[in-house]
Image: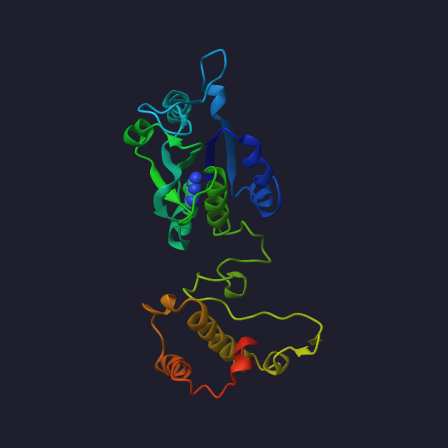
Length: 260
Ligand code: 6GU
């Protein structure tokens, strides 16, 4: 993945991409990132990146000129896929992360700030507008970092050989369209809470079945919407119906503990 990030706060982007897995992904050659300070493309003495909105109103807008100058320079060298982070955008999801992780073109993120960006950037550059959820951030940098992080971890090899996003046990959630089962590590008992017996059984087939049930259970409890368009086996559908009709044979209290 090759990425350019256009921002008025380059340090914010660099500090995250120079740490942890994003740093390793770059060292492993899975990710090339360059951060461009939009201010470097201003032409006035004060290096102005923002200005008042025509028609009045609160806040400042990012000017179109410096953004266009930066993008024009990038266009000379590469074919670009331009994204703009804005709360008005399409809400980012795992499918979009996968799509970006496979992109061969150079991906350019334009990070919005203040009250927004001069509309002519949107009209002329036709960026894909991306939001990370229905709330408003102070700027697009954090949103761009979220999009980059979620996409980079899907590049084969980006997480290293010992971890793979294709492996369910590291996928966290959503990859399978469901919320993952709970995880336990030592000790086997902590503050009177025991690790579910099944996980100590050594029977991998039974453990896999237990995890699948817990995955379905977690999803039904926390995100029932994710179950709507899913292909379930008759047995799985039956299991969910059983829970729904409260025939699960599980006391209310043990629901909270994960019905173990
Ligand atoms: Cl992409 N930008 C801003 N400023 N706020 C957001 C967002 C983006 N996504 C959700 N909230």
